[in-house]
Image 1 (cartoon, rainbow, N blue to C red):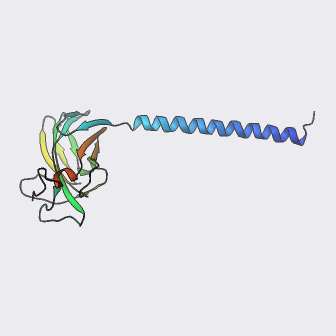
Image 2 (cartoon, rainbow, N blue to C red):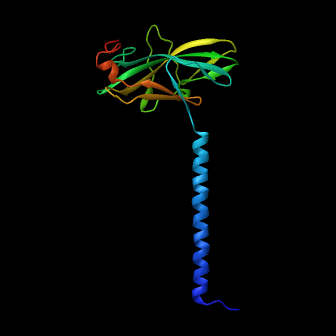
Image 3 (cartoon, rainbow, N blue to C red):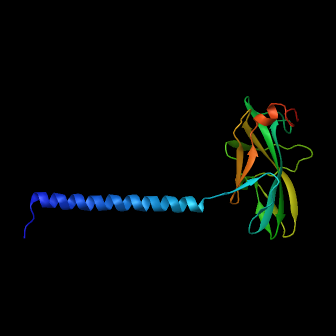
Length: 173
């Protein structure tokens, strides 16, 4: 039996429709699966966060520094010093790239009184604790919070406007 042109065209449209629907379903499935694997647990300053090989917490944020280690930020920006404590359960290596802050640029500056973590990193032995600072250049007078995304956690670091408007830290040098 020979199929006419209309029948062939209809079959082609049906096949094309099925392929498009399958592609949409597959795309939705893969996006949802990707989102599930990227979910971060919300956390806050002072909260102890547990990972496989260590525990850590952000213990302090000075988020409107006008100077750090002799360096000054570009106009419209402040430095943000984030103090982190890590308690190693096993031997680990950590570096500054393990602690990114969205919308802020990690910088390298050193100042007395701060053990600053850089991209070279440090090695900690199991049972060893270390307190260090991470320094970022961040937009000044920003009401929207900054977030550190590290090891499956999204840690709210606050904005910079709170300190600019008279809170503690605005004049810290």
